[in-house]
Length: 157
Image 1 (tube, rainbow, N blue to C red):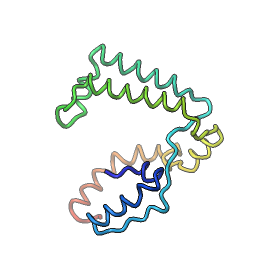
Image 2 (image 1 turned 90 degrees about the vertical axis):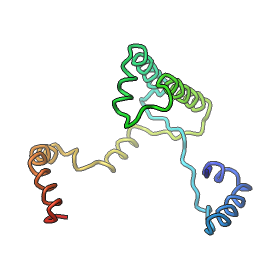
Image 3 (image 1 turned 135 degrees about the horizontal axis):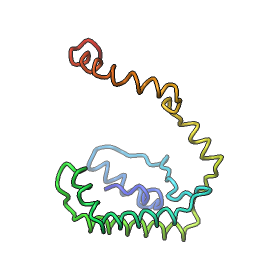
Image 4 (image 1 turned 45 degrees about the vertical axis):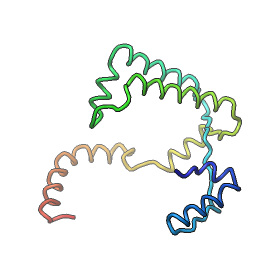
């Protein structure tokens, strides 16, 4: 397992990782450009503690009323290896731990509403255009089966 955080934070650890990779894989790794992403973001107008509390409450309610187990079984391709109750408790514990760590850590990125709007605009997809989306919703049900048949027949790649 390669611990990128440790390689970033512990310069003395890097040479041993480079040596191990060279010995086992025959490759000399260069970690000089390694960058660590911020773990915590604070969004203007979003109370993360409230959102986490709402998620915890919703998950506990679905467990209590019996809805989550059938949902997990329906979505899975095989039976769960960890009981749903135990997995849910593990998830909730991770959410709580992360929230506690975030609240005690000042090293976070602040994202204003203007910053978020700029990010959303930069990554805006064509489907956000109502006219294009409307045409696609009407054409796709007709065109998709024809295109699939053409691909199977080797007419269209």
